Length: 154
Length: 335
Image (cartoon, rainbow over all chains, first blue to last red; front, side, top):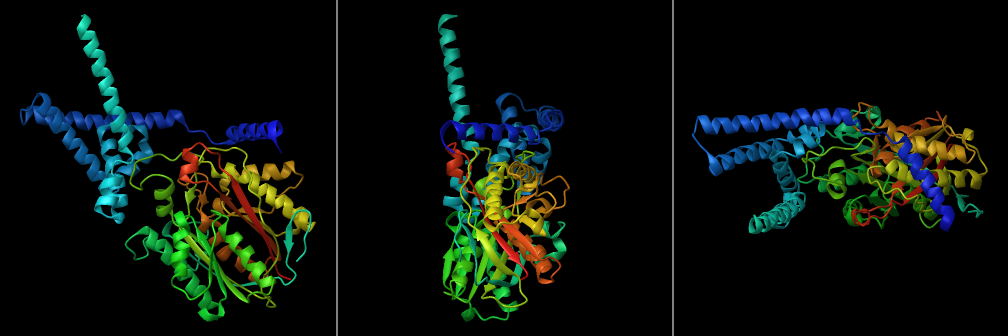
């Protein structure tokens, strides 16, 4: 088989494959993601209230302290081998919050520790989180520029 | 050895498979084939510090024990042919380090076991050697790390995905001995690529090559599916099996009644593995512990074993390449 003929065969085959491949049940996965993600944010909000009303924190310190607690929880549950189980159930619901970011840093760190602390753990730590950081920084620079330009005229 | 238009190899001095040994992980031990395996590990690390070392120890243990239970000594074995899924096939090569046996390391992904059998059978049939040990191994935790994500990452598997089998198998092949199942013919697969790029859909990527090799083998040996008691495929999974049967039907061969896919039966269908098992160990341990004993006890007479492999790497898929498939076939029968 060469040229056009092969292309047609391939296309027919790929159409057939996508037709019989099982589809993700989107309603179910969205529901799971929604309630677990919401519940993680609920815990975050509870931590925030705790810091406001019990410790009297506010502003940047409050935001920092709340994030730290949530990152700790995400990392801790990853270390215990629980967070991946939550992830299998919740999908995006547990990836999007800051706990998911913690999971994406801690899990490769654990995995690659076997190749040593420098070339394993430390260098592979950001394998998954790296792109998030890079595009997060680029995004924030772009937004900053927009604000800056806007400020010149208004 | 005869040559024909379909390039099927017919062994005149057909080698016998005189012993097999299989080791699997805990999850496989809990599956529907659990009671057939020779050794089920309770600890996926097998007492080692890393999963890679565990994988190597699994193959090494299987080789050691298969040689013992075949009543051979290490020095009786003329050739060790093996492979695995890790980069530079370290599990097979590091296993070979433990033995004083000449070694050929092969890689055809999950088709490695039948590739190894074919190479050894040619050497035995050609009277270059008397005894060979073949083996293949895969481990869920090492494969995940090489091909996918860290184990503890909370990622979701798509419904078309398969689960890499933690398993190692080794077989002893010898010059023909009466009473043992013999390898009478084999077909070396061609690489077939229908353009599937979804790395989670290995079944669809491999099914065309499996159908191609089976059809060639049937035509090359002038046989039909109903002449075989079992047609065992390596790791097509549930979806891949469905596609494979359809492709065979399109070619005029109805295989549904005889086809068993190791990937589809190795786990219980409790929904967590989606399409079933995959990996170099999947077909290897299933043949060793399920099909071979049936042949040995003369409960079945003639069977085909087709090991299916997906020849991709993380680099090729990262560059958007499609997934080439390969399938090798052997016919094992009681003469």
